[in-house]
Amino acid sequence: MKTNSLVPRALSAKLPGMSLVAVLAGLGILAARLPLAQQFGLSALSLAIVFGIFVGNSFFSRFALPAAEGVDFSKNTLLRAGIVLYGFRITFQQIGAVGWAGVVTDALVIGLTFTLAVQLGTRVFKLDRQTAMLIGAGSSICGAAAVMATEPVVRGQEHKVSVAVATVVIFGTIAMFAYPLAYPYLGLSEQAYGIFAGSTIHEVAQVVAAGNSVSTAAANTAVIEKMLRVMMLAPFLLLLSGVLKSNRGSFAAATDAGTGSKITIPWFALFFVAASAIHSLGWLSTSLVDALVELDTALLAMAMAALGLRTNMGAVRQAGLRPILLAAVLFGFLAVGGYFINHFIRLLFA
Image (cartoon, rainbow, N blue to C red; front, side):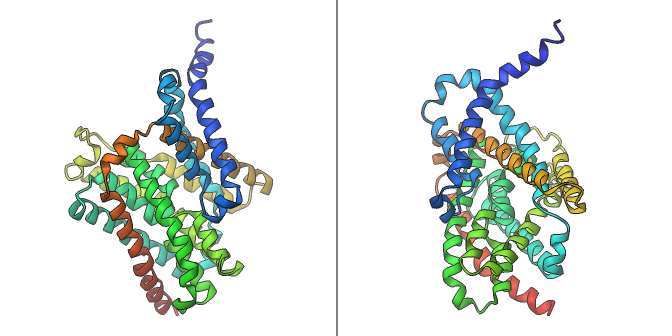
């Protein structure tokens, strides 16, 4: 009898927090479908964390204790499940659609942007390595989802993750408007513009908006290039985990606790690749894949809402302007440096 009661007891302890998180995630998903949100490229993830931050810094303290277990479960376990399911959004076949030029372009953009983020963040802007890495991951790969996926690898604190997500929203939104306005002066074909937008803009929703502002063809190419960039999240996390593990002494500041403990291999990243492989093989029906994608959005939105609830805006304010300045420099590199990277790769593969 005692054994059988363990499951309900564990579940009941999580229900208050998970219920709150689910409501906030639902609001984020519904708000993202509004025309105004779509116009500004605000994803369900970005809006969910905004709602979470609002509640977390207003009246959440009144029932924080009974909700704690469910909120933390959503922030950790549901996050990893969401990253795994993210693999069902892409296929290996999409790589072939853009060719090796698209692969090399994305790899260069990710590698150079992340390296620049860490070096400038720690040496010039004097940020801790965690914050620099989280901002670098969000800028270089796939926005809020990349920040959330990188958090367990670098063991980032809640307010640092929130700062990184905020930079994605700010500069991704700027890019969404700036790229179409600049298009007539870039000297790019619609396909080349799509690859440029997909390889340098932060969030998937922002890429879609920037592409559609030019043409449907540009949007289709941009989304494929962006999905290829998203697919590099798993090898990026594995590589980052390996580097951090082999350089524990150098990266001790990344743990803030200074414990020097091992960094666990992000197994969810491997399952992410497995999900992509299954999707690529076409074993699943379209309706099932659509359902998995919807579930994925819900899980990630819940994780973002939970993160927002755990974010103390006082701590975010203490971070100051330096994270924003770093993100601004990275945005400039993505726009200008990314343009020249794209041009160089086109010449190389011509």
